[in-house]
Structure formats: C-alpha cells, structure tokens
Image 1 (tube, rainbow, N blue to C red):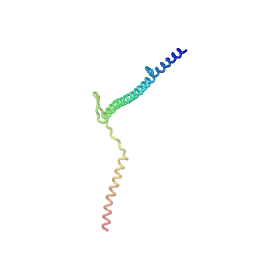
Image 2: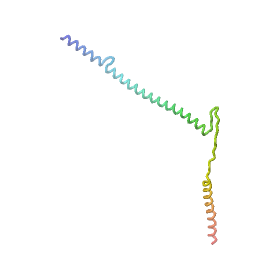
Image 3: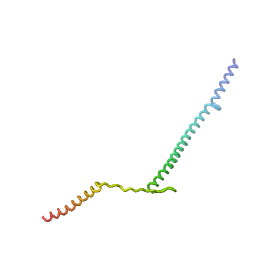
Image 4: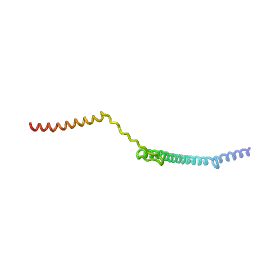
Length: 125
C-alpha cells in the first residue's frame, strides 16, 4: 500500500511539473499568447500600410484619367493618331434680351440729360 502511495505521489508530481515546465506548460502558452498578440498588431499595421498603398494606386490610376480628360477638354491635346475637332456654337440671343438693356440705358441717359437742363432753369429764375 505504501508503494502504491509513493507511485501515485510521484505520478502527481510529474503531472504538476508538466503543467509548469516544458512544451505546453503554462509559461510556454503565455509566451505563445504574447507572440500572437504582437503578430496580430504587426498584421494590422501591415494591412493598414497595404490599404494606404492601394488607395494611392487607385488615386494615381484615376488621377491619370482625370488629368488626361482635363488635357483633352481644356487644352485640346490629343494622343498619337487622333484628330481633334472643335465645334464652336454661337449662343442665341433672344430679341427681348437685346432690347431690354438698351431701353434701360436710354432711360438713364434721358434722365441725366434732363437734370442739367433743370438746374440751368433754376439758376435763371
């Protein structure tokens, strides 16, 4: 019986020692968890860096298209082998729009011409 108690005691000691020493022990798992957290942080930083680079690439790609469109529309630039045609349309001016400012200007001129004549008449009285 005493031998059995000694065997179980030694077995218990080896099992408890296995929890604290060696592969799969608590300290080993804590180190693994710390490395895992550090790796996750590095992965997040790398993903953010990749996202920024991807955004820059998208901006460059769309910026090139926007730049090309602006050069075509504002500067009349073309690519090799293209022909540029510019159509210039003259705006239509309605008759009412032409006459209205002229009529207003004529009434202002008449008022200005009448004011000096009235002031001259006051001085002669």
